Length: 407
Image 1 (cartoon, rainbow, N blue to C red):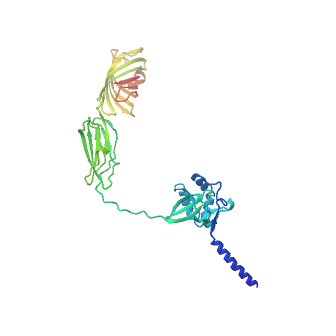
Image 2 (tube, rainbow, N blue to C red):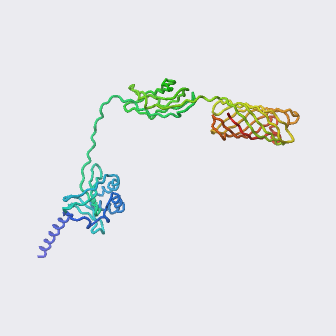
Image 3 (cartoon, rainbow, N blue to C red):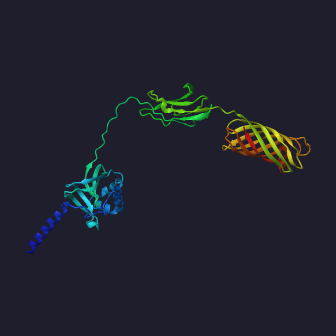
């Protein structure tokens, strides 16, 4: 008898367990067992829910048997297209994450069907993972995360490219300077150019004047960067590219306006005005005028003539100055002078402070006003001493400062 009763109970338990495991859920009301409260209203509130309940979301996916979907769900939620739809009666969900009465542990209901005649609003979106797209639904009123199903992502169709005629090169060009002196080198860089169906074999650089007349041309084979001299009458620069099939780029793609400035004269007028002090004491006001001959941007020769009247001191005499200086410019505004100077007086040739002499002249200065090619002014300091008195500069050396004008 007892054995019969136990058998019946065992069979009943097995049947009951099987029914529970395979039971479907009929859903009639939203909000009785919410995963999240208050109700969701916007996509931002959905994103905030997932962020705030990150661990619960992860647990829900694990209990649903789809832990591999957690990472793509969280990462793609910010970028996927999220729709707000009304879910009608009969809407089916493979599983749904919830909390009983909104409290306690995360639970998962499977095979869920919405059976109410009244629809409910919710979010709907797709998450992609390993070649499949998974459709999720989240009711606004409870925030329960539900999987509706999945479908394979169709492979992109491979369309063979049409056979087309040869395409012309596309020109992309920059010029190091649109304004340069006549004969000055500028760099034309067309390395940004492309040829979709071949290679660029040749670059032709053409300079034109206002009437469209060619005033300069250079052909460069096998390179897209070249240094060219600016012609004096140039107002436009055009680059034409030729590909390996002989097709030329469109002219107007690489046309820029340029301006050729006349080459500045290497000779200009200069004038100095300053004060000089002799340690054995004497004070002088000196002035010089002359010419500067510019060899290049760094080096120049200065020829100066002037006078240095003595204004105070017990030694020395007023002098005529004839100086030839070499000048080295650096750092855009600084310069160093070194050269020979004639200090010519009518004083006593037996006195070192009064005699005429050939001086070593050295100085350093900086431009403080104006641009290099325009009128400008520079401040400088200068020391001069006779060659045979260099070891006695503490007595007979003359130390000065002044301003130099270039016109």
